[in-house]
Image (cartoon, rainbow, N blue to C red; front, side, top):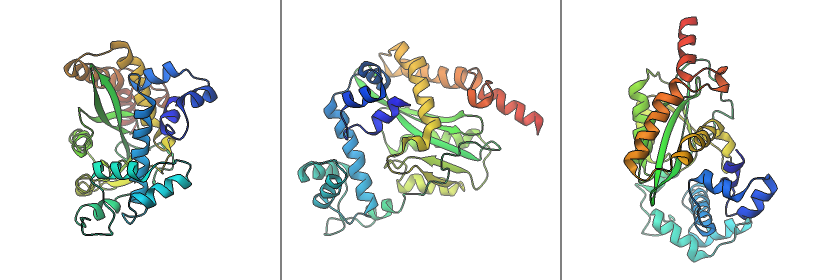
Amino acid sequence: MKYALIREHRGAFTIALMCRVLDVSRAGYYRWLGRPVSTRALRRKHMEDQVTDTYATFKARYGAPRIARELKELGMPCSVNYVADILNKQGLKARNGKAFNYGSHALTMHNVSGNLLWRKFGASRPNQKWTTDITYIWVGDQWLYLATVMDLFSRAIVGWSLNDSMTEQLVTDALSMAFTRRDIEPGLIVHSDRGVQYRSQKYIDYMARKGCVPSMSRKGNCWDNAPMESFFSRLKVELIYAEQYDSISEARSGIFEYIEVFYNRLRRHSANGYVSPAEFERIAAVAA
């Protein structure tokens, strides 16, 4: 979880400083990420998250100059041109001119949901609380993105999707797999962070058609989705770093075996009294 904390605050503090304070090695942190990444790339990703979050917070009313000023006040100085470049590549425009598209951006700003879990990760039955997130995996010479959906009752991974682009379709495919596998009822909470993929209108509408209730972590709180952070950490330590995949097909096969065979059906989970997610659900079903 220390590595997750470092990733959350990259850009605000140097990697070297955070590793020293948390008593971990930089090499270990980079291995956890999947490969050595430049400080510049880490800062860019952090700033992209901060810019889009600030844009959403002020409901698309702020353009690059005001967003840059807000970030400066938060201790993250950056130039107006730097913010403008991020906004342009994200396709975001302030609603202060003719270029603003009220049909797309305005809707996106209304899709920041409250945190319904408040770190209460227990569930009394299956399909009551799900959590979802995306992680990065370095394969060969490119990034792959893995989206997963976890049932907090047993910590089972009920849906997942792997792709070479981090899009709305990636998270929708993972959720679609979960819906196919589980018998859900209206009121199911689906928790995520505030990423643009999870705030997209199509994704929100897809959940709504299934009767699901969206929940989102607070700004800058990686601990609000701690079970998923823990799963990603174990996945990388137990599989990705050990195998060092060279191709997408190899990575997909390995991840399939890890999730579907080992993690869900065999791996003893501390939250389940050291039985696997599948066994935990079987015992609960018998007891019921």
